[in-house]
Image 1 (cartoon, rainbow, N blue to C red):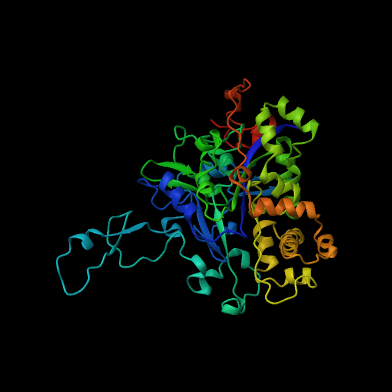
Image 2: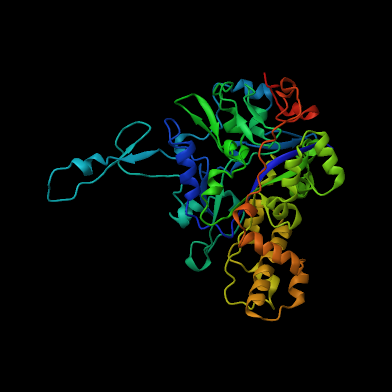
Length: 484
């Protein structure tokens, strides 16, 4: 067992209101500069929809992430000779049209226009080319609130093989918001595919970063990332990505998207995991990937785990933070949060609490699980998004969330609460009270439990870690190019 610490995020989709405050603050802080006008490290998508960039989930097209060959996880993007052979072409990379052409408006026309019979108009023009545009045809949130025809949104890969007849009608439509950022994966395919060895995973907190001095702009990382959360800056000829606001994290402060979230849907905390199991678990059968990733997360209250963590260089303040971590409770203890597309085998560490949706006028207490099956958002859709198709665990999580609402409603109104509801959901009154406090009324300090960087760190041979994707030992073999 080799214990490592990871600062991870959980986003409660049941509370996200799609205001995009997180996107705007992130944009203002990190990508409001030349060459990154089209890039949004944090974006909010309306599901169902094809997202940003377009159809980013279609790995048949992009070939991102990992696949299993001969019992081992290998890059779908290709082996070392394959990547070197297309080093100067990078054919499986989104183009500007797959994102959107960044634009602004000629506001000077409004300010400087002379008196006239008709009101002046600010025409759009491209930031990329400086030329006037006939009309704006796309944007980072073009499908916001189910905008556009259903024929376009129905190309969502999560709807593949699903009978969508009637979904275009208002009575049968469904939607929810999906905030997205870099997943800071435990098994990052971007780091493994970089010919320059510029991408690395920090061993102290798990944040995945790009060394801007080493990056040579080969863009293989963009092709290899299944979430398409790495952007190329043509002004600098460098790849750039979400840095999880690590300067703030090191000071014990949350990421800027979490800090500014209006709905308070984001949680940040430390989890401890066993790095030795990453290679084996990433090659597990698809229907076992979620359970295997859950098994990677260790119990911070286990004395043996604590001793191993201290032995492997995890400081005591990180262990203490892991014991109070809201993300550990949501992910491991209560099992109501899930990773985004675990079938990509990158072991992502931004997890999501699935959203509830209207039940209509069913009598929920008597028709408990029948109501869950009849929700507007299909279980099949959520399972494809969050558990590689496993509907059972999604159903159990939604059952707990519904039981939480029934329990708190009954407690507030003084109604009698049937013990069958709690028994079917597999929760106790104490657990529901703790869930209510964290999901509904948690204070700032309860939602964000972030240890500061330890004042004294154990000595480490950093040069020996240069090929290890942030891990020592055999795990460094994950780097195709050895970091050279």
